Length: 143
Image 1 (spheres, helix red, strand yellow):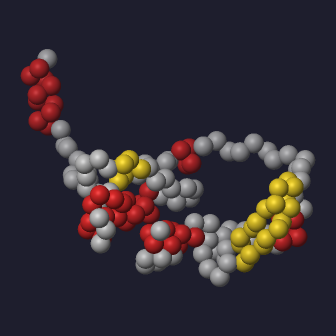
Image 2 (cartoon, rainbow, N blue to C red; image 1 turned 180 degrees about the vertical axis):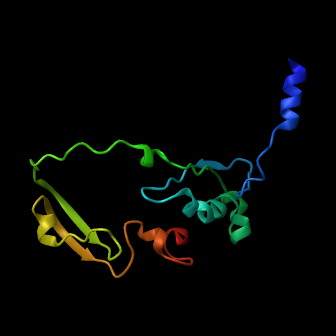
C-alpha cells in the first residue's frame, strides 16, 4: 500500500507556483468575490496588492491572506421562477444610479412606480461593476 502511495506521489503533477504570494505572518484572511457575469481573473491585480503591499509601495504589515474563489455556480443555476405581476411599493427612501454601460437604464418614472425615489443620478461612465471598469489607480484599487 505504501509503495503504491509513494509511486502515485512521484507521478503527481503538482501545480505551479501560485500567482499571488505574500504569506505574511499574522496576515488577516480576506475573500474578495466576483459577481455575475464577472470572473475571478478581474480580481488578480487586487489580490496581489492586498497580499504583497510592500511590492506596491505599501507596508508589509498591511498584508492580507487572500483567497479569490471562482464562482461557477452562476452558470449552473436553474432558471429563475416566473415573476409575479403583484408588486408592492417600497416606501423606504431609495437612490438610483444609472450607468451608461449597464444593460438597462431605467427612467426615473419607471423606477418611481415601485420605489420612493429620493435621488436619481445618471453617471458619466461605467456599468454595473463600475469600480472594475475604471482603469489605472482609480476605482477599486484606489481604495
